Length: 270
Image (cartoon, rainbow, N blue to C red; front, side, top):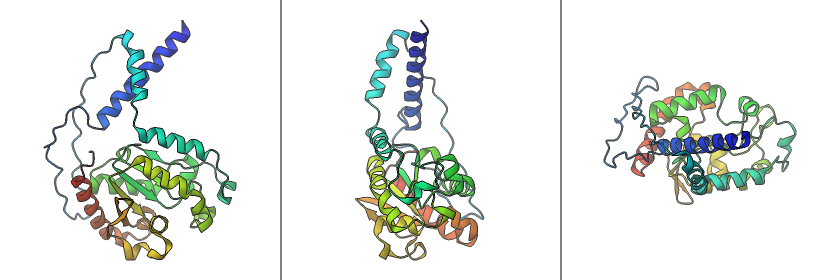
């Protein structure tokens, strides 16, 4: 009887996950002609009015006898991106393809909505990311959250974030070419799996991985749209840089406004 209760609880969790996924993706009937969020104007800081969350919709009741069938169907219909990302993570394993594995605490694979319309690529895990095993935590993560919320009108869980390499370089140095090459197949696999509408590239390292080391630094390239395998890419400053050089927030703000416009034009989910 205990095993049956455990199975019932697992199926109920699957059903709740499916319903929540549907809510986050806006499948509950938001009209296609709904007005866009207010246009943002250059503020003194990062502040604009946040988008209003839709009122929660009560989930329809499900008969206990139908739970097994509903949960099985939900598992079969999960987005292909989630399946592909799990395969990539399995292939990565406890990676020892370069020397960065020696000092890492955790592999930082990526986090967020596996079917996100906005993909954010950073440089390399720092101390805080290495400790938690997630990208963009600590002060740089807090800065990124402000950039997303107050300029793009998005919360972090609506995006997917990752780094060019999965392990922290010693003393937060930049990744070496051999380390970038070791992680490149996994990075490119993640981008293809997620299939975002827009990519936001943060920092020179991430820019160089996608477009080649000869492209130059982020200062020369920020604010200029590029295409990677048919996907528009906007390079701008990394949040960690903005913590050190806050005078460049204004230029980053302009870059993010352009991202917001393109994201909305391409039908990015809100």
